[in-house]
Length: 299
Image: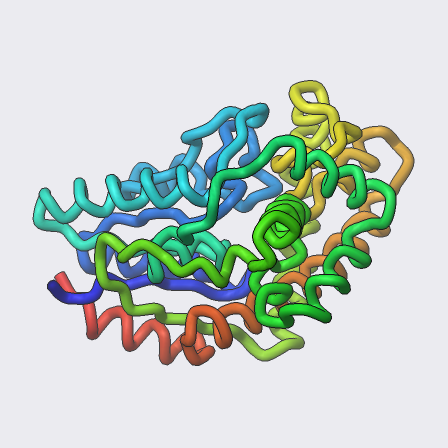
């Protein structure tokens, strides 16, 4: 069958808007590949498509989990493949869109064939994470397996999982291979010039605070404590700790916005590296990606 399109880009580059334009033009549907828009209630800080966009175009895999639920790559792949099959069964084209590289890699390559987690071994690594910090564990992995360290994208939960598996088997998750993917995909990736991307990030953060991000972070803290160890998945989303500080009056919006914009720039750099090295996709301009998408997958 024809390869299905995946559209990805660093955060704030405008991939959601481009995907929406394509879906309206081509009569397609969107399958969202984002580790945090899956959660109900995380709307503002995740830049989740709003009611207007969702009324115009079907969006799949939004609001499929509660904030206190664990949500992992295996669940994402199962839901995404089911959504893709359902869209295809109606004669329409699905476009997978998102910036969570680990999720996209699992779709393209198939789920990794790693052994199941061992709670005792995981607890030991989690205790070491709390004692030594994320950078120390990542440095250990970087010395042994630079590609694995890059693949983990500084995600504490994945770092713990990788180190747990290594200590039990002498191999990292990326070394176990993958089951065959359910569908073939073609990855389209784009970015913007650094100055433009940074300006978009900062403007978006300020708009999020105007829209009530601090209130959303306070609501999240009432559902799931940010002080739980290991850190809950939902509190790994960029900016929510700073937004909570704004809600508590310990941080002003301009300072919070500057801190979040810096963290977002660092994350965007990691995303672009992952796209090139792990997804094997060149980073096009937005215009080039638009032309390729619109001409390659017409109505």
